[in-house]
Image (tube, rainbow, N blue to C red; front, side, top):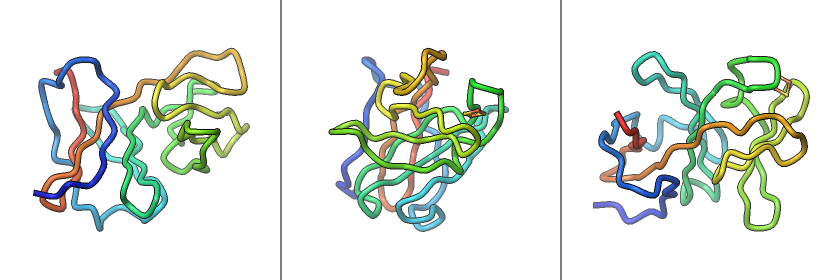
Length: 123
Ligand code: FES
């Protein structure tokens, strides 16, 4: 069992842990898109794979499937992603937009086990 730090968003344990891909299938300190039941999910690792986050790939600003290709960084302790189109920036913990009044994005818990990245869903 791998004990890498993972990020939990949901207050309750997810019903499904989706086995997304191996750790090394994701670019280090970057994002990639995976699909789950027709949803596009952006998955990011920070700190050279020691912290993982997941959110919807859809940017709510102009409804573009793009967030997995966004610029990542942090604002204080808050990991964030900036959409490459118009730089709307979202917290990868709460999903809240940090630089505009637009709606929050959905975020999902991530865990790493035995070199695989899992994303938690409620169904
Ligand atoms: S489409 Fe993402 S910021 Fe405009």
